[in-house]
Image (cartoon, rainbow, N blue to C red; front, top):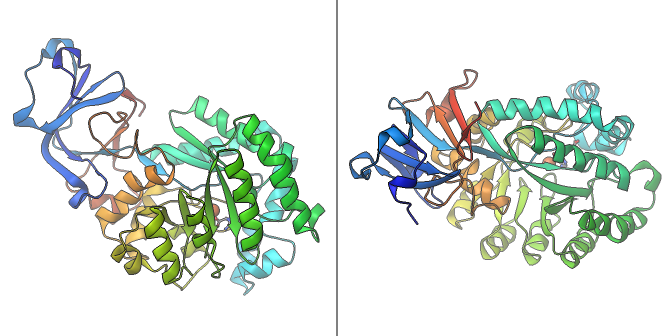
Length: 411
Ligand code: NIG
Ligand code: FE
């Protein structure tokens, strides 16, 4: 519902608006537009000729000087809370070791688990704050943060609490995902079943009781968890009314995406090895395909996700940083926009939809953010560009002029 102009608090004039309305083409753009905001929500937008009469003396008028507005950007898949780094493994991979070799020899995720367990909550907070600030300075106003480097109840809770603290101290909506089934911790080295039991019978119930997660994720992979183990985690999540998502088909095809579709998952993420059956399952369930060009690039993957098939089947595609110490130590959503186009051949309008409307859907918050439309939160980025494709085309000069979170200017 549009609000009478007497109740407006801010208007943006002299702007072009990439509304990013879901399913739209060419950024669902309104050129020579205007937009009104009240109480943190968008209450009017359209062509400037149609702007209703308003009392300018009662309003803050923001003159965009012909620049572009987009929704605040959304990074829908990250692991930014962790201890240590894995530069040593980067060097090993440059000498020929594979990501899987390293994981199978006691490195990989479990080495970050060690560093994360031994870090204090404050230490984790300080390093994650820097990573989130970097993303926020590039226009991010909503983010997903996963646990998964604790792998015991207290350490997983410690990570999720850090995510809560970040949301209290930066103007960014944080969606928290419990990823207890990320890897087998050393103390369960030969007992995957025992660990899954811990995840399903102790961790998920306690995380649910403390309301610490919006979703549950599993790494369904040869170096992660099997189809059957993944299903047990999904069942536990379902029993606690928590939506699921999955890291699947990154290094092999275990059918994790089809399984996730059966559990009405929000998204399936990575997907380089996704089969045609997997694409069909995604189409039928309406889940989002989250592509992670940073991990594809950093692991020097050569097999592309089945992008044409996803397109032909109208599967919504989101793009995220996957920021983490092992496969994507890259805290830049702007670089992801560029890589989505250069590595995955997405069009700039598809890439931008990937970090706005489709990313919102992958987090189940598309009723509030990800589009500039009446009724949505006024999470708005103003960019020093002449056409939206510039956001994907150039990298290294940050074109962000201003950022609004629920109508408040935060940058
Ligand atoms: O999304 N694939 C599993 N998890 C992360 C990587 C974690 C790590 O290597 O630390 C990912 O790529
Ligand atoms: Fe990931």
